[in-house]
Length: 357
Image 1 (tube, helix red, strand yellow):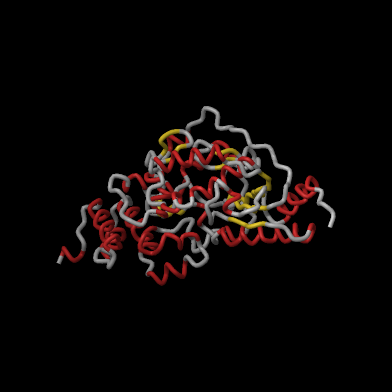
Image 2 (image 1 turned 45 degrees about the vertical axis):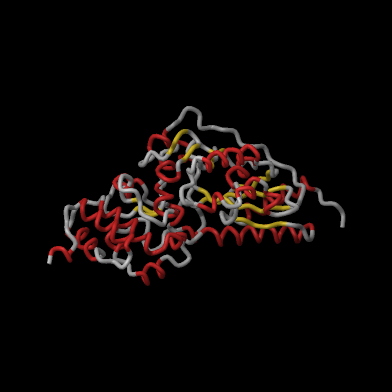
Protein backbone atom coordinates (compact mmCIF):
# COMPACT_ATOMS: atom_id res chain seq x y z
CA UNK A 1 0.00 0.00 0.00
CA UNK A 2 1.27 3.45 -0.83
CA UNK A 3 1.90 5.93 1.99
CA UNK A 4 -1.22 8.07 2.54
CA UNK A 5 -1.19 11.77 1.75
CA UNK A 6 -1.70 12.84 5.38
CA UNK A 7 -2.42 16.46 4.53
CA UNK A 8 -5.24 15.43 2.21
CA UNK A 9 -6.39 12.81 4.71
CA UNK A 10 -6.67 15.40 7.47
CA UNK A 11 -9.00 17.50 5.31
CA UNK A 12 -11.09 14.44 4.48
CA UNK A 13 -11.37 13.56 8.18
CA UNK A 14 -12.73 17.03 8.91
CA UNK A 15 -15.20 16.74 6.04
CA UNK A 16 -16.38 13.30 7.13
CA UNK A 17 -16.71 14.58 10.70
CA UNK A 18 -19.07 17.35 9.58
CA UNK A 19 -21.07 14.85 7.53
CA UNK A 20 -21.46 12.73 10.68
CA UNK A 21 -22.92 15.62 12.65
CA UNK A 22 -19.89 17.16 14.33
CA UNK A 23 -19.73 20.92 14.03
CA UNK A 24 -15.93 20.97 13.99
CA UNK A 25 -13.00 18.55 13.95
CA UNK A 26 -9.38 19.42 14.71
CA UNK A 27 -6.11 17.56 15.15
CA UNK A 28 -3.57 17.95 17.97
CA UNK A 29 -0.26 16.46 18.98
CA UNK A 30 -0.06 14.73 22.36
CA UNK A 31 2.15 17.14 24.32
CA UNK A 32 -0.01 18.29 27.25
CA UNK A 33 2.83 18.91 29.70
CA UNK A 34 1.67 22.46 30.48
CA UNK A 35 -1.80 21.30 31.45
CA UNK A 36 -0.45 18.26 33.29
CA UNK A 37 1.49 20.50 35.67
CA UNK A 38 -1.65 22.56 36.24
CA UNK A 39 -3.66 19.38 36.95
CA UNK A 40 -1.11 18.23 39.52
CA UNK A 41 -1.29 21.56 41.36
CA UNK A 42 -5.10 21.36 41.33
CA UNK A 43 -5.03 17.87 42.80
CA UNK A 44 -2.48 18.90 45.44
CA UNK A 45 -4.92 21.57 46.63
CA UNK A 46 -7.62 18.85 46.94
CA UNK A 47 -9.94 20.84 44.70
CA UNK A 48 -11.15 17.54 43.22
CA UNK A 49 -13.05 16.68 46.40
CA UNK A 50 -14.29 13.08 46.39
CA UNK A 51 -13.56 12.55 42.69
CA UNK A 52 -10.88 9.97 43.33
CA UNK A 53 -10.86 9.04 39.65
CA UNK A 54 -9.23 12.41 38.95
CA UNK A 55 -6.33 11.39 41.16
CA UNK A 56 -6.15 7.81 39.97
CA UNK A 57 -4.15 7.36 36.78
CA UNK A 58 -3.26 11.07 36.67
CA UNK A 59 -0.10 10.04 34.85
CA UNK A 60 -2.21 8.64 32.01
CA UNK A 61 -3.94 12.01 31.62
CA UNK A 62 -0.52 13.57 31.25
CA UNK A 63 0.80 10.99 28.78
CA UNK A 64 -1.72 9.97 26.11
CA UNK A 65 0.82 7.62 24.55
CA UNK A 66 0.74 5.53 27.73
CA UNK A 67 -3.04 5.38 27.75
CA UNK A 68 -3.01 4.15 24.16
CA UNK A 69 0.48 2.97 23.13
CA UNK A 70 1.53 4.20 19.72
CA UNK A 71 -0.62 7.34 19.81
CA UNK A 72 0.82 10.20 17.77
CA UNK A 73 -2.19 12.45 17.27
CA UNK A 74 -5.60 13.15 18.74
CA UNK A 75 -8.54 13.88 16.45
CA UNK A 76 -10.81 16.09 18.55
CA UNK A 77 -14.44 16.73 17.62
CA UNK A 78 -17.22 18.88 19.07
CA UNK A 79 -20.99 18.59 18.77
CA UNK A 80 -23.57 21.23 19.77
CA UNK A 81 -26.16 20.13 22.33
CA UNK A 82 -28.30 23.16 23.24
CA UNK A 83 -31.93 22.19 22.57
CA UNK A 84 -34.20 24.42 20.49
CA UNK A 85 -36.29 26.92 22.49
CA UNK A 86 -35.29 25.48 25.85
CA UNK A 87 -36.05 27.66 28.86
CA UNK A 88 -33.08 28.47 31.07
CA UNK A 89 -33.23 31.80 32.85
CA UNK A 90 -37.00 31.44 33.19
CA UNK A 91 -36.65 28.13 35.02
CA UNK A 92 -33.92 29.47 37.30
CA UNK A 93 -36.20 32.34 38.22
CA UNK A 94 -39.09 30.00 39.05
CA UNK A 95 -38.22 28.41 42.43
CA UNK A 96 -40.99 25.83 42.09
CA UNK A 97 -39.43 24.34 38.95
CA UNK A 98 -36.36 22.11 38.77
CA UNK A 99 -33.30 23.26 36.88
CA UNK A 100 -31.49 20.43 35.10
CA UNK A 101 -28.27 21.27 33.28
CA UNK A 102 -29.01 21.61 29.59
CA UNK A 103 -26.60 18.86 28.57
CA UNK A 104 -28.61 16.28 30.52
CA UNK A 105 -32.11 17.00 29.19
CA UNK A 106 -31.98 14.48 26.35
CA UNK A 107 -30.36 11.11 25.84
CA UNK A 108 -26.92 10.43 27.23
CA UNK A 109 -24.37 11.87 24.81
CA UNK A 110 -21.68 9.28 25.48
CA UNK A 111 -23.06 6.51 23.28
CA UNK A 112 -24.17 8.83 20.47
CA UNK A 113 -20.80 10.57 20.13
CA UNK A 114 -18.83 7.36 20.56
CA UNK A 115 -20.90 5.80 17.76
CA UNK A 116 -20.17 8.77 15.47
CA UNK A 117 -16.47 8.60 16.29
CA UNK A 118 -16.50 4.90 15.43
CA UNK A 119 -18.16 5.74 12.11
CA UNK A 120 -15.46 8.31 11.47
CA UNK A 121 -12.76 5.73 12.21
CA UNK A 122 -14.47 3.28 9.86
CA UNK A 123 -14.40 5.83 7.03
CA UNK A 124 -10.71 6.43 7.61
CA UNK A 125 -10.10 2.70 7.60
CA UNK A 126 -12.02 2.26 4.37
CA UNK A 127 -9.87 4.96 2.80
CA UNK A 128 -6.37 3.95 3.97
CA UNK A 129 -6.71 0.48 5.45
CA UNK A 130 -6.05 -0.70 9.01
CA UNK A 131 -4.68 1.85 11.47
CA UNK A 132 -4.44 2.20 15.23
CA UNK A 133 -7.09 4.18 17.07
CA UNK A 134 -9.30 4.33 20.16
CA UNK A 135 -12.35 6.51 20.77
CA UNK A 136 -13.02 8.41 24.00
CA UNK A 137 -16.04 10.39 25.19
CA UNK A 138 -15.49 11.68 28.72
CA UNK A 139 -14.89 8.09 29.81
CA UNK A 140 -11.16 7.74 30.48
CA UNK A 141 -8.25 9.74 31.91
CA UNK A 142 -8.05 12.20 29.02
CA UNK A 143 -7.33 15.95 29.20
CA UNK A 144 -9.98 16.52 26.55
CA UNK A 145 -10.24 20.31 26.86
CA UNK A 146 -6.48 20.73 26.68
CA UNK A 147 -6.34 18.54 23.58
CA UNK A 148 -9.33 20.31 22.01
CA UNK A 149 -7.66 23.67 22.64
CA UNK A 150 -4.51 22.42 20.91
CA UNK A 151 -6.68 21.16 18.03
CA UNK A 152 -8.09 24.66 17.53
CA UNK A 153 -11.63 23.92 18.72
CA UNK A 154 -11.62 26.71 21.27
CA UNK A 155 -9.80 28.06 24.31
CA UNK A 156 -10.17 27.08 27.95
CA UNK A 157 -12.03 30.02 29.44
CA UNK A 158 -11.88 31.50 32.91
CA UNK A 159 -14.83 29.25 33.81
CA UNK A 160 -12.68 26.20 32.79
CA UNK A 161 -15.09 25.47 29.91
CA UNK A 162 -13.91 25.22 26.32
CA UNK A 163 -15.18 28.31 24.47
CA UNK A 164 -15.36 28.67 20.71
CA UNK A 165 -15.30 32.12 19.12
CA UNK A 166 -18.10 31.21 16.70
CA UNK A 167 -20.08 28.74 18.79
CA UNK A 168 -19.83 29.59 22.49
CA UNK A 169 -19.53 26.63 24.84
CA UNK A 170 -22.73 24.58 24.59
CA UNK A 171 -21.09 21.54 22.98
CA UNK A 172 -19.77 18.06 23.79
CA UNK A 173 -16.28 16.81 23.03
CA UNK A 174 -15.01 13.45 21.81
CA UNK A 175 -11.62 12.14 20.72
CA UNK A 176 -9.97 9.58 18.50
CA UNK A 177 -6.45 8.70 19.64
CA UNK A 178 -4.57 7.54 16.56
CA UNK A 179 -1.15 6.42 15.37
CA UNK A 180 -1.50 8.38 12.13
CA UNK A 181 1.08 11.21 11.76
CA UNK A 182 -1.51 13.76 10.66
CA UNK A 183 -0.71 17.47 10.36
CA UNK A 184 -1.81 19.38 13.45
CA UNK A 185 -4.01 22.44 13.71
CA UNK A 186 -3.13 25.77 15.29
CA UNK A 187 -3.90 26.11 18.99
CA UNK A 188 -6.83 28.42 19.73
CA UNK A 189 -6.01 31.81 21.24
CA UNK A 190 -7.42 33.04 24.54
CA UNK A 191 -10.30 35.49 24.06
CA UNK A 192 -11.81 36.03 27.51
CA UNK A 193 -10.06 39.38 27.80
CA UNK A 194 -10.89 41.29 30.98
CA UNK A 195 -14.35 39.71 31.35
CA UNK A 196 -14.98 38.09 34.75
CA UNK A 197 -18.75 37.55 34.48
CA UNK A 198 -18.47 33.78 35.05
CA UNK A 199 -16.34 34.21 38.16
CA UNK A 200 -18.80 36.66 39.69
CA UNK A 201 -22.05 34.86 38.84
CA UNK A 202 -21.21 31.51 40.45
CA UNK A 203 -23.89 30.92 43.12
CA UNK A 204 -21.49 29.19 45.53
CA UNK A 205 -18.37 31.26 44.73
CA UNK A 206 -16.59 28.11 43.56
CA UNK A 207 -13.95 29.90 41.49
CA UNK A 208 -10.72 30.49 43.38
CA UNK A 209 -9.60 32.63 40.46
CA UNK A 210 -9.57 32.65 36.65
CA UNK A 211 -9.32 29.09 35.29
CA UNK A 212 -9.24 27.70 38.83
CA UNK A 213 -12.33 25.91 40.16
CA UNK A 214 -12.73 24.43 43.62
CA UNK A 215 -15.00 21.55 42.65
CA UNK A 216 -15.98 20.99 46.27
CA UNK A 217 -18.16 24.12 46.04
CA UNK A 218 -19.35 23.67 42.45
CA UNK A 219 -23.06 22.83 42.14
CA UNK A 220 -22.36 20.38 39.32
CA UNK A 221 -20.04 18.48 41.66
CA UNK A 222 -22.44 18.72 44.59
CA UNK A 223 -25.43 17.40 42.65
CA UNK A 224 -23.69 14.76 40.52
CA UNK A 225 -20.30 13.64 41.81
CA UNK A 226 -20.76 14.02 45.56
CA UNK A 227 -22.41 10.96 47.12
CA UNK A 228 -22.46 12.17 50.72
CA UNK A 229 -24.19 15.09 52.48
CA UNK A 230 -24.10 18.56 50.95
CA UNK A 231 -22.62 21.12 53.33
CA UNK A 232 -25.47 23.00 55.05
CA UNK A 233 -23.96 26.39 54.26
CA UNK A 234 -24.03 25.60 50.53
CA UNK A 235 -27.62 24.34 50.39
CA UNK A 236 -29.37 27.75 50.37
CA UNK A 237 -27.05 28.89 47.56
CA UNK A 238 -28.08 26.05 45.25
CA UNK A 239 -31.54 27.41 44.58
CA UNK A 240 -33.54 25.04 42.36
CA UNK A 241 -30.55 23.46 40.61
CA UNK A 242 -31.04 19.70 41.02
CA UNK A 243 -28.63 18.28 38.44
CA UNK A 244 -25.68 20.35 37.33
CA UNK A 245 -25.39 24.10 36.89
CA UNK A 246 -25.04 26.29 33.79
CA UNK A 247 -24.67 29.75 35.34
CA UNK A 248 -21.09 30.28 34.20
CA UNK A 249 -22.17 29.51 30.62
CA UNK A 250 -25.41 31.49 30.72
CA UNK A 251 -23.53 34.69 31.48
CA UNK A 252 -20.73 34.15 28.95
CA UNK A 253 -20.85 36.78 26.17
CA UNK A 254 -19.51 34.29 23.64
CA UNK A 255 -22.63 32.16 23.97
CA UNK A 256 -24.61 34.68 21.96
CA UNK A 257 -23.05 32.85 19.01
CA UNK A 258 -24.32 29.43 20.12
CA UNK A 259 -26.52 27.49 17.71
CA UNK A 260 -29.32 25.10 18.62
CA UNK A 261 -28.55 21.43 18.09
CA UNK A 262 -29.96 19.49 15.17
CA UNK A 263 -29.67 16.20 17.07
CA UNK A 264 -33.12 14.94 18.08
CA UNK A 265 -31.58 12.77 20.80
CA UNK A 266 -30.58 15.92 22.66
CA UNK A 267 -34.17 17.22 22.82
CA UNK A 268 -35.68 17.37 26.35
CA UNK A 269 -37.37 14.21 27.61
CA UNK A 270 -40.12 13.84 30.24
CA UNK A 271 -40.51 17.66 30.31
CA UNK A 272 -37.30 17.92 32.30
CA UNK A 273 -36.68 21.37 30.91
CA UNK A 274 -39.64 22.73 32.90
CA UNK A 275 -40.64 20.07 35.45
CA UNK A 276 -42.02 20.92 38.88
CA UNK A 277 -39.83 20.09 41.89
CA UNK A 278 -42.68 18.36 43.73
CA UNK A 279 -43.43 16.18 40.72
CA UNK A 280 -39.84 14.96 40.46
CA UNK A 281 -39.49 14.49 44.23
CA UNK A 282 -42.49 12.16 44.26
CA UNK A 283 -41.01 9.84 41.63
CA UNK A 284 -40.66 6.34 43.01
CA UNK A 285 -37.36 4.56 42.44
CA UNK A 286 -39.06 2.66 39.61
CA UNK A 287 -40.14 5.99 38.11
CA UNK A 288 -36.59 7.30 38.37
CA UNK A 289 -35.13 4.22 36.70
CA UNK A 290 -37.72 4.36 33.92
CA UNK A 291 -37.57 8.11 33.31
CA UNK A 292 -33.77 8.28 33.32
CA UNK A 293 -33.23 5.34 30.98
CA UNK A 294 -30.56 6.37 28.49
CA UNK A 295 -30.02 9.64 30.38
CA UNK A 296 -26.93 11.15 32.00
CA UNK A 297 -29.10 11.82 35.06
CA UNK A 298 -29.03 8.11 35.89
CA UNK A 299 -25.43 8.61 37.02
CA UNK A 300 -26.41 10.47 40.17
CA UNK A 301 -28.58 7.62 41.46
CA UNK A 302 -32.00 7.75 43.08
CA UNK A 303 -30.76 8.53 46.58
CA UNK A 304 -28.74 11.57 45.48
CA UNK A 305 -31.60 12.62 43.20
CA UNK A 306 -33.92 12.83 46.24
CA UNK A 307 -31.19 14.58 48.24
CA UNK A 308 -30.82 17.25 45.54
CA UNK A 309 -34.56 17.75 45.20
CA UNK A 310 -34.97 18.01 48.98
CA UNK A 311 -32.48 20.87 49.00
CA UNK A 312 -34.30 22.60 46.15
CA UNK A 313 -37.64 22.15 47.93
CA UNK A 314 -36.09 23.66 51.03
CA UNK A 315 -35.29 26.70 48.91
CA UNK A 316 -38.76 26.81 47.32
CA UNK A 317 -41.68 28.94 48.53
CA UNK A 318 -43.59 27.47 51.47
CA UNK A 319 -46.72 25.90 50.05
CA UNK A 320 -48.93 23.06 51.19
CA UNK A 321 -47.72 20.96 48.24
CA UNK A 322 -44.03 21.54 49.00
CA UNK A 323 -44.30 20.83 52.72
CA UNK A 324 -46.53 17.79 52.14
CA UNK A 325 -44.08 16.33 49.61
CA UNK A 326 -41.16 16.78 52.03
CA UNK A 327 -43.11 15.26 54.91
CA UNK A 328 -43.86 12.20 52.77
CA UNK A 329 -40.10 11.46 52.64
CA UNK A 330 -39.29 12.41 56.25
CA UNK A 331 -38.99 8.75 57.28
CA UNK A 332 -37.22 7.61 54.13
CA UNK A 333 -35.02 4.53 54.52
CA UNK A 334 -31.94 6.53 53.45
CA UNK A 335 -30.24 8.52 56.22
CA UNK A 336 -28.88 10.83 53.54
CA UNK A 337 -32.37 11.64 52.26
CA UNK A 338 -33.77 12.02 55.77
CA UNK A 339 -31.05 14.52 56.69
CA UNK A 340 -31.74 16.76 53.73
CA UNK A 341 -35.51 16.49 54.09
CA UNK A 342 -35.22 17.50 57.74
CA UNK A 343 -33.13 20.50 56.73
CA UNK A 344 -35.68 21.45 54.07
CA UNK A 345 -38.56 21.22 56.52
CA UNK A 346 -36.65 23.48 58.91
CA UNK A 347 -36.51 26.10 56.16
CA UNK A 348 -40.31 26.01 56.08
CA UNK A 349 -40.52 25.79 59.87
CA UNK A 350 -42.52 22.60 59.41
CA UNK A 351 -42.40 19.34 61.31
CA UNK A 352 -42.41 15.85 59.82
CA UNK A 353 -45.81 14.21 59.99
CA UNK A 354 -44.49 11.66 62.50
CA UNK A 355 -43.68 14.47 64.94
CA UNK A 356 -47.05 16.10 64.48
CA UNK A 357 -48.94 13.03 65.75
